[in-house]
Each structure stands twice: as structure tokens, then as C-alpha cells.
Length: 66
Image 1 (cartoon, one colour):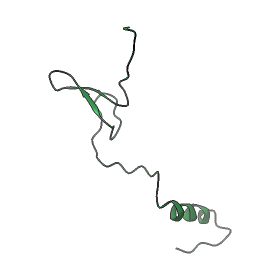
Image 2: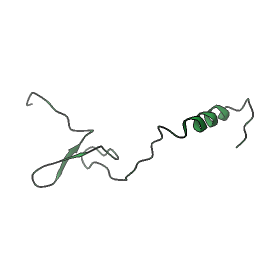
Image 3: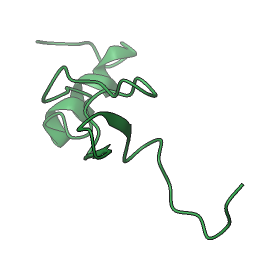
Image 4: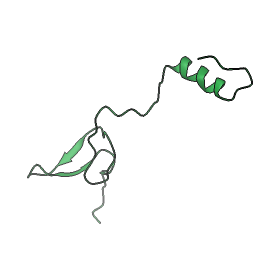
């Protein structure tokens, strides 16, 4: 596509071509965490009954019990 030098989209087009779309949010899967709703977490945490209790985005390690 050809843009004029004074067109604001020309910079965006050049950056898209330069980076080849690096950093775009295209999800590899449509799976989402049933607890927090984030799409495509790195991994899930399951309890003994094989039910999801969270993912790598919403579960964290703590040294103190609330």
C-alpha cells in the first residue's frame, strides 16, 4: 500500500513492515481461564478432582496463610 509522506498512517505502516507484526495479540487458542477469564494463560492449576482453581495469571505463591 502506498501512503503520502504527510499521512499519519505512513509511520504505522512502516513500523508494521519493519517489525513483521511482532507483539500483536493473536491468541494461539481460544481457551480462557474459568477463574479470571484471561485468554491463553501459560498453564493452569488443577486440584485433586481435576477441576481448575486458577492459571498462571491469577494464582500466586504466598508465604503467609490469610
